View 1 (cartoon, rainbow, N blue to C red):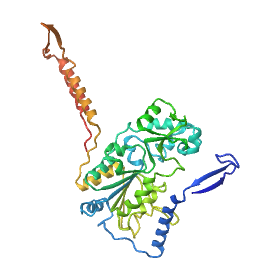
View 2 (cartoon, one colour):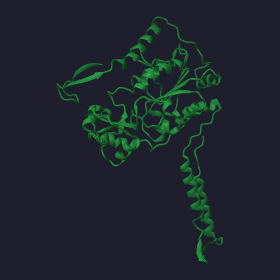
View 3 (tube, rainbow, N blue to C red):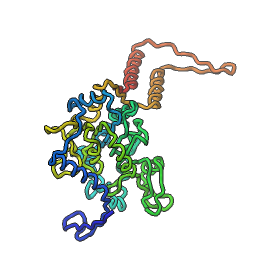
View 4 (tube, helix red, strand yellow):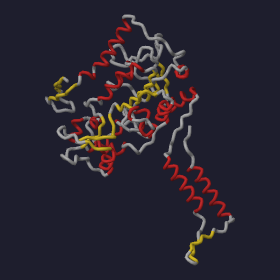
Amino acid sequence: MIQVSIFFKKGSFIEMNKVVNIQVDVCLFLPPLVDFLRNLFSRFLGLGSGEKVLDELTLDGVAQYMKSGKCKNILCMVGAGISTSAGIPDFRSPETGLYANLQKYNLPYPEAIFQMDYFKEHPEPFFALAKELYPGQFKPTICHYFMKLLKDKGLLRRCYTQNIDTLERVAGLEADDLIEAHGTFYTSHCFSFSCRKEYNLDWMKEKIFSDDIPKCEKCQSVVKPDIVFFGENLPDRFFTLMKTDFPQCDLLIIMGTSLQVQPFASLVSRVSKSCPRLLINMEKAGQSGIMDFGGGMDFDSDKAYRDVAYISTCDDGCLALADLLGWKVTHCACLWWELLLKYIFIYIVLFTDKITKCCTEKGETKTTAPTPQKDDKTKENLNNRRKIIKKIIQLKEI
Protein backbone atom coordinates (compact mmCIF):
# COMPACT_ATOMS: atom_id res chain seq x y z
CA MET A 1 0.00 0.00 0.00
CA ILE A 2 1.14 3.57 -0.66
CA GLN A 3 -0.22 6.80 0.79
CA VAL A 4 -0.94 9.75 -1.49
CA SER A 5 -1.65 13.30 -0.32
CA ILE A 6 -3.91 15.32 -2.60
CA PHE A 7 -4.38 19.12 -2.37
CA PHE A 8 -7.70 20.38 -3.74
CA LYS A 9 -7.73 23.89 -5.15
CA LYS A 10 -10.28 26.55 -4.32
CA GLY A 11 -13.71 25.90 -5.77
CA SER A 12 -13.64 22.16 -5.47
CA PHE A 13 -16.23 20.32 -3.39
CA ILE A 14 -13.58 19.79 -0.71
CA GLU A 15 -12.62 22.94 1.19
CA MET A 16 -9.51 24.82 0.10
CA ASN A 17 -6.12 23.64 1.31
CA LYS A 18 -7.57 20.47 2.83
CA VAL A 19 -5.25 17.51 2.43
CA VAL A 20 -6.83 14.15 1.71
CA ASN A 21 -4.76 11.07 2.45
CA ILE A 22 -5.68 8.10 0.29
CA GLN A 23 -4.39 4.60 0.70
CA VAL A 24 -3.93 2.98 -2.67
CA ASP A 25 -3.42 -0.71 -3.29
CA VAL A 26 -0.84 -0.67 -6.08
CA CYS A 27 -1.84 -4.20 -7.08
CA LEU A 28 -5.18 -2.90 -8.33
CA PHE A 29 -3.42 -0.93 -11.05
CA LEU A 30 -0.97 -3.60 -12.18
CA PRO A 31 -3.42 -5.73 -14.24
CA PRO A 32 -4.61 -2.83 -16.45
CA LEU A 33 -1.01 -1.60 -16.81
CA VAL A 34 0.15 -5.05 -17.90
CA ASP A 35 -2.80 -5.26 -20.31
CA PHE A 36 -1.84 -1.91 -21.81
CA LEU A 37 1.79 -2.95 -22.32
CA ARG A 38 0.73 -6.27 -23.82
CA ASN A 39 -1.61 -4.54 -26.28
CA LEU A 40 1.04 -1.95 -27.10
CA PHE A 41 3.70 -4.54 -27.94
CA SER A 42 1.21 -6.64 -29.89
CA ARG A 43 0.23 -3.65 -31.97
CA PHE A 44 3.61 -2.10 -32.73
CA LEU A 45 6.02 -5.03 -32.55
CA GLY A 46 3.93 -7.38 -34.65
CA LEU A 47 3.36 -9.99 -31.98
CA GLY A 48 0.89 -12.48 -33.39
CA SER A 49 -2.71 -12.90 -32.40
CA GLY A 50 -4.14 -16.15 -31.17
CA GLU A 51 -5.66 -18.93 -33.18
CA LYS A 52 -8.96 -18.07 -34.84
CA VAL A 53 -11.63 -20.42 -33.52
CA LEU A 54 -14.80 -18.70 -34.76
CA ASP A 55 -15.95 -19.35 -38.33
CA GLU A 56 -17.52 -15.89 -38.37
CA LEU A 57 -17.58 -12.94 -35.98
CA THR A 58 -21.32 -13.10 -35.36
CA LEU A 59 -23.65 -14.51 -32.77
CA ASP A 60 -24.20 -17.47 -35.07
CA GLY A 61 -20.44 -18.02 -35.15
CA VAL A 62 -20.40 -18.13 -31.35
CA ALA A 63 -23.31 -20.58 -31.34
CA GLN A 64 -21.56 -22.88 -33.82
CA TYR A 65 -18.44 -22.81 -31.65
CA MET A 66 -20.48 -23.71 -28.57
CA LYS A 67 -22.06 -26.61 -30.46
CA SER A 68 -18.67 -27.93 -31.55
CA GLY A 69 -17.91 -29.42 -28.14
CA LYS A 70 -14.71 -27.37 -27.80
CA CYS A 71 -16.37 -24.96 -25.40
CA LYS A 72 -16.49 -26.34 -21.84
CA ASN A 73 -15.28 -23.53 -19.56
CA ILE A 74 -17.45 -20.47 -20.10
CA LEU A 75 -16.93 -17.41 -17.95
CA CYS A 76 -19.59 -14.72 -17.67
CA MET A 77 -18.81 -11.13 -16.74
CA VAL A 78 -21.98 -9.21 -15.94
CA GLY A 79 -22.99 -5.75 -14.79
CA ALA A 80 -26.07 -3.71 -13.97
CA GLY A 81 -27.47 -4.04 -17.49
CA ILE A 82 -28.60 -7.62 -16.88
CA SER A 83 -30.94 -6.49 -14.10
CA THR A 84 -32.60 -3.45 -15.68
CA SER A 85 -35.49 -5.56 -17.02
CA ALA A 86 -36.11 -6.68 -13.44
CA GLY A 87 -36.78 -3.05 -12.52
CA ILE A 88 -33.37 -2.28 -11.04
CA PRO A 89 -31.75 0.81 -12.59
CA ASP A 90 -28.21 0.76 -13.89
CA PHE A 91 -25.76 3.40 -12.70
CA ARG A 92 -24.83 5.59 -15.64
CA SER A 93 -27.80 5.89 -18.02
CA PRO A 94 -28.39 9.66 -18.48
CA GLU A 95 -32.06 9.81 -17.42
CA THR A 96 -32.97 6.44 -15.90
CA GLY A 97 -29.69 5.50 -14.23
CA LEU A 98 -29.20 5.38 -10.49
CA TYR A 99 -26.81 8.33 -10.40
CA ALA A 100 -29.29 10.49 -12.33
CA ASN A 101 -32.03 9.92 -9.74
CA LEU A 102 -30.32 10.63 -6.42
CA GLN A 103 -31.32 14.29 -6.09
CA LYS A 104 -33.74 13.50 -3.26
CA TYR A 105 -30.83 12.47 -1.04
CA ASN A 106 -29.14 15.91 -1.27
CA LEU A 107 -25.73 14.44 -2.03
CA PRO A 108 -22.75 16.68 -2.83
CA TYR A 109 -22.24 14.50 -5.93
CA PRO A 110 -23.89 11.18 -6.94
CA GLU A 111 -20.94 8.89 -6.21
CA ALA A 112 -20.82 10.11 -2.59
CA ILE A 113 -23.51 7.61 -1.62
CA PHE A 114 -20.95 4.82 -2.14
CA GLN A 115 -17.93 6.58 -0.63
CA MET A 116 -16.55 5.64 2.77
CA ASP A 117 -15.88 9.14 4.09
CA TYR A 118 -19.39 10.32 3.30
CA PHE A 119 -20.95 7.13 4.70
CA LYS A 120 -19.15 7.61 8.03
CA GLU A 121 -20.77 11.02 8.51
CA HIS A 122 -24.07 10.49 6.67
CA PRO A 123 -25.18 6.83 6.47
CA GLU A 124 -28.87 7.76 6.05
CA PRO A 125 -28.90 8.20 2.22
CA PHE A 126 -27.24 4.83 1.65
CA PHE A 127 -29.71 2.93 3.84
CA ALA A 128 -32.66 4.75 2.26
CA LEU A 129 -31.40 3.66 -1.15
CA ALA A 130 -30.69 0.16 0.17
CA LYS A 131 -34.34 -0.16 1.16
CA GLU A 132 -35.39 0.54 -2.44
CA LEU A 133 -32.90 -1.92 -3.94
CA TYR A 134 -32.83 -4.57 -1.22
CA PRO A 135 -32.61 -8.22 -2.34
CA GLY A 136 -35.88 -10.13 -2.36
CA GLN A 137 -37.99 -7.41 -4.00
CA PHE A 138 -37.00 -8.25 -7.57
CA LYS A 139 -37.07 -11.37 -9.72
CA PRO A 140 -34.28 -12.71 -11.97
CA THR A 141 -34.35 -11.91 -15.66
CA ILE A 142 -34.03 -14.12 -18.73
CA CYS A 143 -30.31 -13.32 -18.68
CA HIS A 144 -29.96 -14.70 -15.15
CA TYR A 145 -31.77 -17.90 -16.12
CA PHE A 146 -29.60 -18.24 -19.24
CA MET A 147 -26.53 -18.37 -17.00
CA LYS A 148 -28.29 -20.97 -14.85
CA LEU A 149 -28.90 -22.95 -18.05
CA LEU A 150 -25.17 -22.79 -18.83
CA LYS A 151 -24.53 -24.20 -15.36
CA ASP A 152 -27.10 -26.98 -15.81
CA LYS A 153 -25.44 -28.01 -19.08
CA GLY A 154 -22.04 -28.16 -17.39
CA LEU A 155 -20.61 -25.26 -19.39
CA LEU A 156 -20.37 -22.47 -16.81
CA ARG A 157 -17.07 -22.26 -14.97
CA ARG A 158 -17.89 -19.08 -13.08
CA CYS A 159 -19.93 -15.89 -13.18
CA TYR A 160 -18.10 -12.68 -12.25
CA THR A 161 -20.71 -10.08 -11.35
CA GLN A 162 -20.52 -6.40 -10.48
CA ASN A 163 -24.07 -6.52 -9.15
CA ILE A 164 -25.14 -6.53 -5.51
CA ASP A 165 -28.79 -7.48 -6.12
CA THR A 166 -28.10 -11.23 -5.57
CA LEU A 167 -30.39 -12.17 -8.48
CA GLU A 168 -27.78 -14.65 -9.69
CA ARG A 169 -28.33 -16.59 -6.46
CA VAL A 170 -32.11 -16.33 -6.76
CA ALA A 171 -31.91 -17.76 -10.29
CA GLY A 172 -30.10 -20.82 -8.95
CA LEU A 173 -26.37 -20.11 -9.11
CA GLU A 174 -24.60 -21.22 -5.96
CA ALA A 175 -21.89 -19.44 -4.00
CA ASP A 176 -19.15 -21.47 -5.69
CA ASP A 177 -20.47 -20.41 -9.12
CA LEU A 178 -20.14 -16.73 -8.28
CA ILE A 179 -17.54 -14.06 -7.79
CA GLU A 180 -19.43 -11.07 -6.40
CA ALA A 181 -16.71 -8.60 -7.26
CA HIS A 182 -18.41 -5.61 -5.69
CA GLY A 183 -19.62 -7.44 -2.63
CA THR A 184 -22.98 -8.66 -1.38
CA PHE A 185 -25.87 -7.93 0.96
CA TYR A 186 -25.76 -11.49 2.27
CA THR A 187 -23.42 -10.55 5.11
CA SER A 188 -22.70 -7.33 6.98
CA HIS A 189 -20.03 -6.22 9.44
CA CYS A 190 -19.65 -3.61 12.12
CA PHE A 191 -17.93 -0.55 10.69
CA SER A 192 -15.54 -0.31 13.64
CA PHE A 193 -12.16 -1.90 12.85
CA SER A 194 -11.76 -2.92 16.49
CA CYS A 195 -15.07 -4.83 16.47
CA ARG A 196 -16.04 -6.13 12.98
CA LYS A 197 -18.92 -8.22 14.36
CA GLU A 198 -20.73 -10.06 11.56
CA TYR A 199 -24.49 -9.95 10.90
CA ASN A 200 -26.64 -11.92 8.47
CA LEU A 201 -29.10 -10.92 5.74
CA ASP A 202 -32.24 -11.25 7.88
CA TRP A 203 -30.82 -9.05 10.65
CA MET A 204 -29.88 -6.31 8.19
CA LYS A 205 -33.21 -6.53 6.37
CA GLU A 206 -35.15 -6.06 9.61
CA LYS A 207 -33.15 -2.93 10.44
CA ILE A 208 -33.40 -1.40 6.96
CA PHE A 209 -37.14 -1.97 6.59
CA SER A 210 -37.84 -0.55 10.03
CA ASP A 211 -36.06 2.63 8.85
CA ASP A 212 -33.41 2.28 11.55
CA ILE A 213 -29.73 2.91 10.97
CA PRO A 214 -28.24 -0.54 11.75
CA LYS A 215 -26.11 -0.28 14.88
CA CYS A 216 -23.77 -2.94 16.23
CA GLU A 217 -25.19 -4.75 19.25
CA LYS A 218 -21.70 -4.93 20.72
CA CYS A 219 -20.24 -1.45 20.25
CA GLN A 220 -23.08 0.65 18.74
CA SER A 221 -21.10 1.53 15.62
CA VAL A 222 -22.88 1.55 12.25
CA VAL A 223 -23.15 -1.86 10.58
CA LYS A 224 -22.44 -1.82 6.84
CA PRO A 225 -23.44 -4.51 4.31
CA ASP A 226 -20.43 -6.20 2.71
CA ILE A 227 -20.74 -4.34 -0.57
CA VAL A 228 -17.62 -2.66 -1.91
CA PHE A 229 -17.54 1.13 -1.66
CA PHE A 230 -15.20 3.36 -3.61
CA GLY A 231 -11.77 3.10 -2.03
CA GLU A 232 -12.32 -0.39 -0.60
CA ASN A 233 -10.48 -3.46 -1.81
CA LEU A 234 -12.36 -6.10 -3.73
CA PRO A 235 -12.90 -9.47 -2.01
CA ASP A 236 -9.84 -11.74 -1.78
CA ARG A 237 -11.81 -14.42 -3.61
CA PHE A 238 -11.87 -12.18 -6.70
CA PHE A 239 -8.08 -12.00 -6.93
CA THR A 240 -7.52 -15.64 -6.01
CA LEU A 241 -9.85 -17.31 -8.51
CA MET A 242 -9.27 -14.99 -11.46
CA LYS A 243 -5.69 -16.33 -11.66
CA THR A 244 -6.97 -19.83 -12.44
CA ASP A 245 -10.35 -19.14 -14.06
CA PHE A 246 -9.34 -16.88 -16.92
CA PRO A 247 -6.40 -18.89 -18.31
CA GLN A 248 -8.77 -21.90 -18.52
CA CYS A 249 -11.63 -19.96 -20.14
CA ASP A 250 -12.60 -21.01 -23.68
CA LEU A 251 -15.49 -18.53 -24.12
CA LEU A 252 -15.94 -15.21 -22.34
CA ILE A 253 -19.49 -13.80 -22.34
CA ILE A 254 -19.72 -10.16 -21.22
CA MET A 255 -23.19 -8.75 -20.57
CA GLY A 256 -24.64 -5.49 -19.33
CA THR A 257 -21.46 -3.70 -18.32
CA SER A 258 -19.72 -0.61 -19.65
CA LEU A 259 -16.31 -2.05 -18.70
CA GLN A 260 -15.29 1.25 -17.15
CA VAL A 261 -14.55 0.21 -13.57
CA GLN A 262 -11.15 -1.27 -12.75
CA PRO A 263 -9.92 -3.81 -11.94
CA PHE A 264 -13.08 -5.62 -13.11
CA ALA A 265 -12.80 -4.24 -16.65
CA SER A 266 -9.26 -5.57 -17.08
CA LEU A 267 -10.46 -9.16 -16.70
CA VAL A 268 -11.37 -9.28 -20.40
CA SER A 269 -7.66 -9.28 -21.23
CA ARG A 270 -6.82 -12.18 -18.93
CA VAL A 271 -8.17 -14.89 -21.21
CA SER A 272 -5.88 -16.53 -23.76
CA LYS A 273 -5.38 -14.90 -27.15
CA SER A 274 -7.43 -17.60 -28.85
CA CYS A 275 -10.42 -17.31 -26.49
CA PRO A 276 -13.51 -15.81 -28.18
CA ARG A 277 -15.17 -12.90 -26.38
CA LEU A 278 -18.88 -12.13 -26.82
CA LEU A 279 -20.29 -8.79 -25.69
CA ILE A 280 -24.07 -8.49 -25.29
CA ASN A 281 -24.84 -4.88 -24.47
CA MET A 282 -26.76 -1.82 -25.61
CA GLU A 283 -23.52 -0.34 -26.95
CA LYS A 284 -20.00 -1.47 -27.66
CA ALA A 285 -17.65 -1.43 -24.68
CA GLY A 286 -14.12 -2.42 -23.75
CA GLN A 287 -12.50 -0.90 -26.83
CA SER A 288 -9.36 0.90 -25.70
CA GLY A 289 -7.52 3.65 -27.48
CA ILE A 290 -3.76 3.80 -27.71
CA MET A 291 -3.30 5.19 -24.20
CA ASP A 292 -6.21 3.45 -22.48
CA PHE A 293 -5.64 0.79 -19.84
CA GLY A 294 -7.46 -2.52 -20.01
CA GLY A 295 -10.06 -3.59 -22.50
CA GLY A 296 -8.47 -3.98 -25.87
CA MET A 297 -11.53 -5.55 -27.49
CA ASP A 298 -11.54 -5.30 -31.26
CA PHE A 299 -14.88 -5.63 -33.02
CA ASP A 300 -14.39 -3.68 -36.23
CA SER A 301 -10.79 -3.53 -37.44
CA ASP A 302 -9.27 -5.64 -40.19
CA LYS A 303 -7.33 -7.53 -37.52
CA ALA A 304 -10.45 -8.53 -35.55
CA TYR A 305 -10.52 -12.29 -35.13
CA ARG A 306 -12.28 -13.26 -31.88
CA ASP A 307 -14.46 -10.43 -30.51
CA VAL A 308 -18.20 -10.32 -31.25
CA ALA A 309 -20.57 -7.51 -30.26
CA TYR A 310 -24.30 -8.21 -30.23
CA ILE A 311 -26.04 -4.88 -29.68
CA SER A 312 -29.33 -5.44 -27.88
CA THR A 313 -30.77 -5.81 -24.42
CA CYS A 314 -29.18 -8.61 -22.45
CA ASP A 315 -32.43 -10.58 -22.38
CA ASP A 316 -32.87 -10.37 -26.16
CA GLY A 317 -29.25 -11.34 -26.72
CA CYS A 318 -29.54 -14.39 -24.48
CA LEU A 319 -32.77 -15.45 -26.19
CA ALA A 320 -31.18 -15.06 -29.62
CA LEU A 321 -28.17 -17.16 -28.60
CA ALA A 322 -30.38 -19.78 -26.95
CA ASP A 323 -32.47 -20.00 -30.12
CA LEU A 324 -29.37 -20.57 -32.26
CA LEU A 325 -28.31 -23.30 -29.84
CA GLY A 326 -31.74 -24.91 -29.86
CA TRP A 327 -32.15 -24.27 -26.15
CA LYS A 328 -35.28 -23.16 -24.33
CA VAL A 329 -34.87 -20.59 -21.59
CA THR A 330 -37.65 -20.77 -19.02
CA HIS A 331 -38.19 -17.45 -17.33
CA CYS A 332 -39.73 -18.61 -14.07
CA ALA A 333 -41.79 -15.59 -13.19
CA CYS A 334 -43.24 -17.35 -10.16
CA LEU A 335 -41.84 -19.51 -7.42
CA TRP A 336 -43.63 -22.71 -6.41
CA TRP A 337 -45.31 -21.05 -3.45
CA GLU A 338 -46.54 -18.25 -5.68
CA LEU A 339 -48.09 -20.83 -7.97
CA LEU A 340 -49.79 -22.44 -5.00
CA LEU A 341 -51.26 -19.11 -3.96
CA LYS A 342 -52.46 -18.52 -7.51
CA TYR A 343 -54.35 -21.80 -7.59
CA ILE A 344 -55.82 -21.20 -4.14
CA PHE A 345 -57.05 -17.86 -5.40
CA ILE A 346 -58.51 -19.51 -8.50
CA TYR A 347 -60.41 -21.93 -6.29
CA ILE A 348 -61.82 -19.05 -4.26
CA VAL A 349 -62.89 -17.15 -7.40
CA LEU A 350 -64.63 -20.21 -8.83
CA PHE A 351 -66.67 -20.95 -5.75
CA THR A 352 -67.46 -17.53 -4.29
CA ASP A 353 -71.00 -17.65 -5.71
CA LYS A 354 -71.81 -20.96 -4.01
CA ILE A 355 -73.65 -20.91 -0.74
CA THR A 356 -72.87 -23.65 1.68
CA LYS A 357 -75.52 -24.36 4.27
CA CYS A 358 -74.28 -26.13 7.35
CA CYS A 359 -76.57 -27.65 9.87
CA THR A 360 -76.01 -29.94 12.73
CA GLU A 361 -78.21 -33.00 12.94
CA LYS A 362 -77.54 -35.73 15.45
CA GLY A 363 -74.05 -34.38 16.10
CA GLU A 364 -73.01 -34.44 12.40
CA THR A 365 -72.29 -31.57 10.04
CA LYS A 366 -73.85 -31.79 6.61
CA THR A 367 -73.15 -29.64 3.62
CA THR A 368 -75.74 -29.12 0.93
CA ALA A 369 -74.63 -28.06 -2.50
CA PRO A 370 -76.37 -25.03 -3.98
CA THR A 371 -78.74 -25.31 -6.88
CA PRO A 372 -77.06 -24.10 -10.07
CA GLN A 373 -78.24 -20.68 -11.18
CA LYS A 374 -78.90 -20.22 -14.86
CA ASP A 375 -79.91 -16.63 -15.11
CA ASP A 376 -78.04 -14.10 -17.23
CA LYS A 377 -76.36 -12.47 -14.24
CA THR A 378 -74.82 -15.76 -13.14
CA LYS A 379 -73.52 -16.47 -16.65
CA GLU A 380 -71.99 -13.01 -16.78
CA ASN A 381 -70.31 -13.57 -13.41
CA LEU A 382 -68.91 -16.91 -14.57
CA ASN A 383 -67.53 -15.35 -17.75
CA ASN A 384 -65.89 -12.60 -15.73
CA ARG A 385 -64.34 -15.16 -13.42
CA ARG A 386 -62.99 -17.14 -16.37
CA LYS A 387 -61.31 -14.00 -17.67
CA ILE A 388 -59.77 -13.38 -14.25
CA ILE A 389 -58.54 -16.97 -14.08
CA LYS A 390 -56.90 -16.72 -17.50
CA LYS A 391 -54.98 -13.65 -16.36
CA ILE A 392 -53.95 -15.30 -13.11
CA ILE A 393 -52.55 -18.46 -14.64
CA GLN A 394 -50.56 -16.75 -17.39
CA LEU A 395 -46.92 -17.63 -16.72
CA LYS A 396 -44.03 -16.19 -18.70
CA GLU A 397 -42.44 -19.21 -20.28
CA ILE A 398 -40.10 -18.41 -23.10
